[in-house]
Image (cartoon, rainbow, N blue to C red; front, side, top):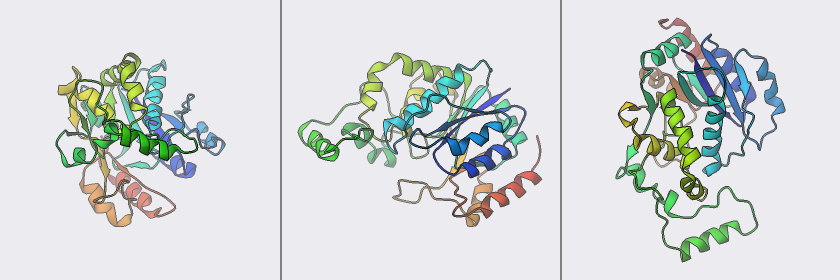
Length: 288
């Protein structure tokens, strides 16, 4: 069974190079989406690595904007159109790194090919208490014009709270952006965005859609019973912080004891030794 790793990148091509070389496996292919705001030339050398292709339809990715979710979904659609048959579509960022050997990762997906993996919390959770404003208010994150914030504030003062356009229970969470979907779930998700134009128009004025839209769609689908509430990634969100912690050598034991397949996020400009320590661990781990 082949696995497509879709990688969202916007910085540190050398760190991405290390990730790609680390994950070389005969059943792995890599599809890199480079943020359209970023010059792609520093990334072009990565195309020489076995199994690496670039997403052709690049999108500008604004943090918190619908544009980020759009980049993820459009990249998935592009890979689905590829003639290669994949059993899993695994979304990574260029600041992720594997905590298991490639053989163990491949073996895990082979053993769980009927399932899909994404983290979610249901409505009423602590996360949702602070997240409803993401769709109830108007957000102009992906727009760029003079007076944008003034207009945004006025819209939210004058107009009533927005209501989610579809009748469904909402799911999401701070760790929901990154997922591993089998082909059945991936096709369902891509088709959903092709047919539900109402939700796409609504989401353009939302914030942080990558953390709640995909789990909401999948958990309201006929595939619900095969969605596992686990994104297979070690991510440390400090209390009250909007961004995950940059992982360092001091975090190694917690990461490895988590038994997750991947971890994020790393930055070689802050701590490069942590990646070497993970490499040593995975090279000595049991091969499947």
